[in-house]
Structure formats: C-alpha cells, structure tokens
Image: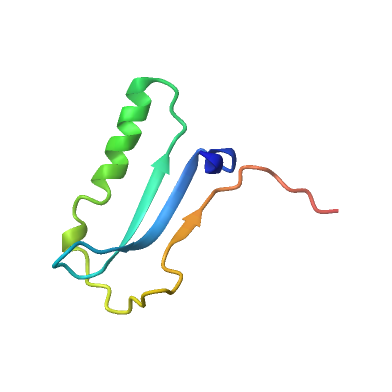
Length: 83
C-alpha cells in the first residue's frame, strides 16, 4: 500500500451508508505499525470496534453526493527547522 510510505497510522473521516439506513459520519484510525501477529490483530480489532456502533451515530443529513466527503489524515513525524 503506497500510503504506508506516508505514515503507518492514518485517520479516515468519512460518511457511511448502508441500504435502508441513513448516512452517518465516521472517524476511523488505521494503525499499520505492528510487526507481529498479535499487534496487527489488536490494531484491526480496535479499528473495527470504532465503527461497530455506527448505526447509533447521529444521522448526517448534510451529505451531498459527489462532494468531497472523505478525509485522510497522515501524522507527520518529521521535525522541520525554519531558519
């Protein structure tokens, strides 16, 4: 995955829609920093748990199809020095 070069951790903010349900906003962190199976499994579990209650989230009535509705946030861990 190319985005892995930007950051091992990415936050995804977007809008979800299931058939017969309303639009809901979500905020999901994907942690791809683990090296062993236990760390990877735990990270996937946390990501999954963060959206399990999505059906109970407030309805997002402002959704506009075709608008930019998804945001990917990559933390920058590089220190910049301004001179």
